[in-house]
Length: 509
Image (cartoon, rainbow, N blue to C red):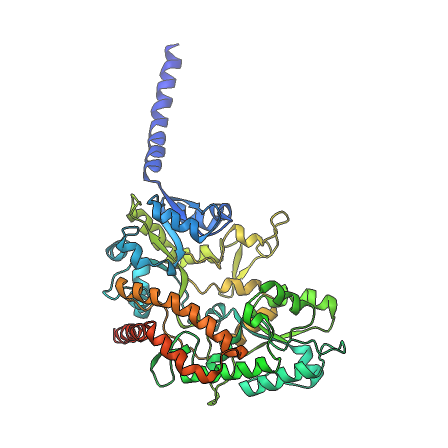
């Protein structure tokens, strides 16, 4: 009996250090609640790449999402004051205002002390920090950074553009249009020469919400922009925009534009495309997977091509896609005032900016979801195999490359799973100048931002109404000056003054 008791005591003494070690590990583990805008929150909680980062940092992240994945649910959460530790949400939520209201914390000193990976990036590439800091040099959020150093990096931000029916061009002996004049010729031919071959003049030469994509060929955008002479302008108040509206009015009057250009019905747009009525439209790079199979059920010869942005009179192509002009995604990550251990949160997030962390978030785990061949990452057969139950690629059990986590990566892993048509489309749309684009996220004071937002709420509605009238001819373009005068009365002169001042300060930093 005594021997058994002695043996038991010795066993407990041997186990005690192990049990103590477990307790210490549990004490070091910090749980961080992380708010996402997604309906697939459980998918994120199972990501193997994130789990590896958790093990490396001693942090346990629990992803959450709003019950109905809505903007209203998010606003109600912020208003309630019942905040998670970390929020990943749209930059347009007004991060500066959230700081002023006490919802998020200032990260400037925390990043300097506990985020060596991000600090190194900001030191080596100061233009990155300039895009995210406030006017007085403070940091309130962690960005998802695209290096924009390779063609592939730029392609990942060029996921939307102009698309045309290539088989219609071939049938009519036409080339892909390169200028506004050539677009007019092609659209007119689509209207009059029966390219769908059904014997009726039912073709819709151009359809959908993409009309503003033609504005850069006139030298402006349909928003704030930097004109070719270096002047900061609000496009819809410029003479060049009037020239754009005159062209759109002419196209509309001649039946070259479909009704969805004005009322923006995605369902009607889709129906017209797949039923062989639409000759060209603005779409995403997945259009070849989304539309073409249904199109070819109706017409086996159906084919589409991406169209480069139309050239201006000087032969320059300008992209209207604002996100191509910056390195940051529109989704950002903040640490809230409710976080009890912001240092642990910062360390976890900073690991995501390391080469290892960014790879784990985009490519996943080496030997499982990817391998390295001749110095290049390649997805494995497993990663490219759809999950038989869930339908998505098994890559997404390891990493979700297109998610805007805080990281330094061009998300080029996405290209590795693309069919050739999508790659060609992104390459076509990426080949353009960003010179017209007003740099995204130029900082303003909270007061200036509030004033501009208040004016722009009314101005945006007015412009939408007047553009519709100008294009349809309900309002003659001879009244364009009166339209400009109304915008000035609504406060656009003051808004432009603020934008020009902010731009000058930004460029001089």
